[in-house]
Amino acid sequence: MRILVTGGAGYIGSHTCVQLLEAGYEIVVADDLSNSSETAIHYIKGITGKEFPFYPVDLKDRERTEQLFELEPIDGVIHFAGYKAVGESVERPLMYYENNLVSTMNVLQAMRKRGIFHFVFSSSATVYGDPEILPIPEEAPLSATNPYGCTKLMNEQMLKDLYQSDNRWNITLLRYFNPIGGHPTGLLADNPNGIPNNLMPYIIRVYENKLDQLHVYGNDYPTPDGTGVRDYIHVIDLADGHVAALDRMKEPGVHIFNLGTGTGYSVLEVVRAFENVNKCRIPYVIDPRRAGDIAMCYADPSKAERELGWKARRSLEEMCKVVLI
Image (tube, rainbow, N blue to C red; front, side, top):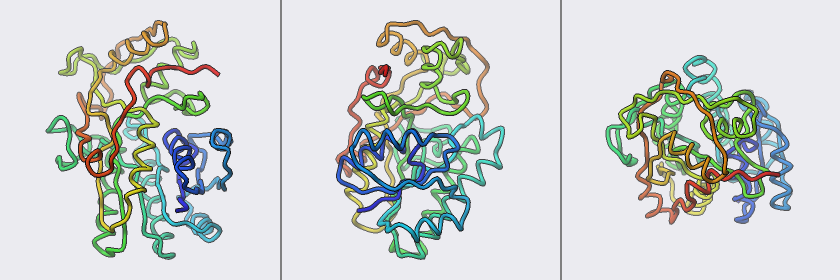
């Protein structure tokens, strides 16, 4: 299969491109580079020794999206392209709704026009809102506590409605928990533009003396040490989940899987693991809670293991290890 990877220069997208190429898939990559760099494309090619086309396309532009599908033969799409910062989504909700919904609609319309019906969507554990059940199964009630999560939930509903209207579609919704870590070469990592919104790239900026201290948002949650608990998963394990989803993509329908480890770690537990693995100290300060954050969130990943043959295998220590290049 020849797979269009939207957002393929980003953190999760770039690692998935590597795993797809190494698994024998052909890829085409589209990314507007708004929160990534074309350097990642060169690194993917260097790591794998394989060439592929890259298009710096903003998928909100319907005409450019259509042109991409005219230029390249495509059998299926993995759709990563989207803004992803919870805090920023609270501050700039219209930007999130426009980007995350319009880009998906444009891609789906281009696919339908050409009879392409294989679609893997980059969803999120944020669709469970403040979860009522822990660990969280795929059947848990859905809600959202911030605009970012709302865009994921609305995209999921759009895809379910699309299948109901045309049952030729083969749609997989992959609900990610919290990806961290990077490629063992050190070439690919979570390195966003500006000040990071996610925990691990923030810790690494402090480790590299690019920031003075880590800001921990809230230590008064009902958790063992008061800081938020999340299910951290190595980004390569997450990427392997996409390969597993494509490998089983045979029957039409809407297929939903959690991609997580099933274990929750607090912010301070991650900080301590990082310090132990990298023999360093990470200074931090406690700030008030961020709007839209919740206390605890971790997966029940048993369905993915049962139906995809996939399981997260890398430890927290492996996730925290910094590779210097």
